[in-house]
Amino acid sequence: MIHTHPRPWASLLVLVLVFLLAGPAMAGVPQLTLAQVYEQGVPLEDYWVSEKLDGVRAYWDGDKLVSRQGHRFHAPDWFTRDFPDTPMDGELWMGRGTFAELSGVVRKLEPVDAEWRQVHYEIFDLPAHPGPFSERVAAMQRLLQPSPSPYLAMIEQTRGTTHMALMDRLDDVVAAGAEGLMLHRSDSLYHAGRNDDLLKVKKYQDAEADVVGYSPGKGKYEGMLGALVVERSDGRRFKLGTGFSDEQRAHPPAMGATVTYKFYGYTSTGLPRFASFMRVRDDEPAEE
Image 1: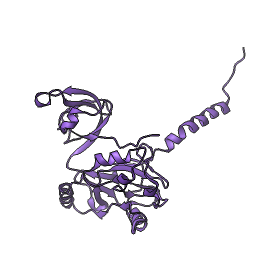
Image 2 (image 1 turned 120 degrees about the vertical axis):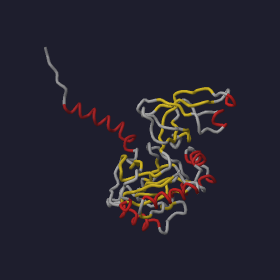
Image 3 (image 1 turned 180 degrees about the vertical axis):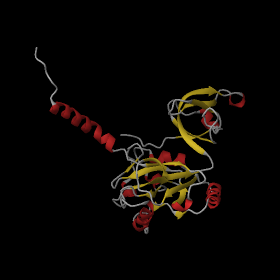
Image 4 (image 1 turned 135 degrees about the horizontal axis):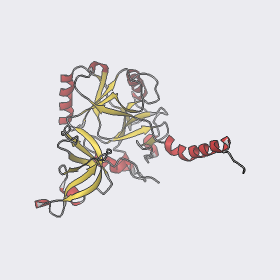
């Protein structure tokens, strides 16, 4: 009997082929830093404070704008023509309370010039810069003051002081229609993943879940949506029965859609307390 043994070069060839096939998709997903939730007691003098924009996260790789999942935003050429070739992390934004309208604009495969002229790219970090955040703030100021493009700006950064001052500022921006605030640790380097170097400050917590079912409405909502049945990434299910407009109850989010909900802490069973619907999380651009 002849025994055969796998040749090392054959295994290597398979690995190379797998990398070549999967590489472009894997390489296209930007490695972004993600925020944790602020809790009182954090040494705020170690942080920079900025407004949390209710926009669409976008990464500028020096050539194009891409989403969190690595899909290209089909912005008009004139929109990014004067952007620097420096990688930038930020938000496509149209103003406070305009997320739904903005999402409809930036997700289109064929951009509409008149719509994109209302959009700005507001940056809050420089992912390729090797220094701590305080140095990156100074670098952003040098890069964008003055800005090389009327569609490109830097989100204002100010130094943190006390919890009371932070809460006063949170009250002010929320009253003006903002979503909340962000905290960046001054000595932190840019790195991917969720960590305490970046914190979000809001009057409520929010998270995402997938639509897995519907409960019918009763009374004035008979024949319409009563509640969405949603599932978290850990498999736990619960209902969202508030936060919908009459239009959304008549035409609820599709099965499988990802929705954002807000809540106020957790129950003793670990489910979100007073959870209510906020919006469909549809910020990924259309694919060709």
